[in-house]
Length: 327
Image (cartoon, rainbow, N blue to C red):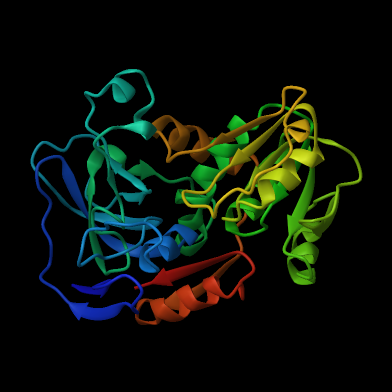
């Protein structure tokens, strides 16, 4: 098989011809149709998430066709189109797994980080963490749902049911979750990097009621804010924007340090909380909601061999929507 391989963090991926993999017990093999390029991939490739499996095939927004079953796999047929997300395996026995919080498992495996992912022509996945996909778009358009969509969904649920929502960092997750929030009947305010007029226009085109810079205040206090940008300095800004009893949800796996801030902006029962990974229930719930909400993703397709270019475009903020690799 052909793959783009991370041999050392901080270095470009290298194109390699590798032996075709075969699934073990409880695993499936996919012929990869598309794989999204996620900001978490940048954190892995750039070394901000430490101790990856090396050498590593990144990528955790995988859409593929099942072409081989390992021993003991049931309920999945050869030729099925499935999606594989970030959380690739859990132990099933720790206190978190046994209490319905497998996203906090003590011994997890993560696709494209601690097990090989989808920047390749083929990928191996735990059959229990492969999901049937709705028939709402092309393979490339579905790929971003498998992390940006799933983590976005979990963060939206954590934000509560308030009618006004602020979204900080208008990237892939934001452009998906804005559509879901509008379908739920919420009003959405979008916050972008100062001066990023294109992102603000993009948010408004999708139905945001207001779009402005992250250091601005919204037209009215908001019930909750979700921070998708990996910028800790946004936390006190979001706290100032939410009303009493409001929530600020930090949705990324990595964030720069949060600066000190006065207790007065946290007081009056405001909350700051984080989102970690996802559960299989999150995947089932969101993949059922997405077609009902009419979610459409904006994607830019790249051949597999141009994975480094896709990562550079994401790193530099040159994309509206998602980058997707197509083997």
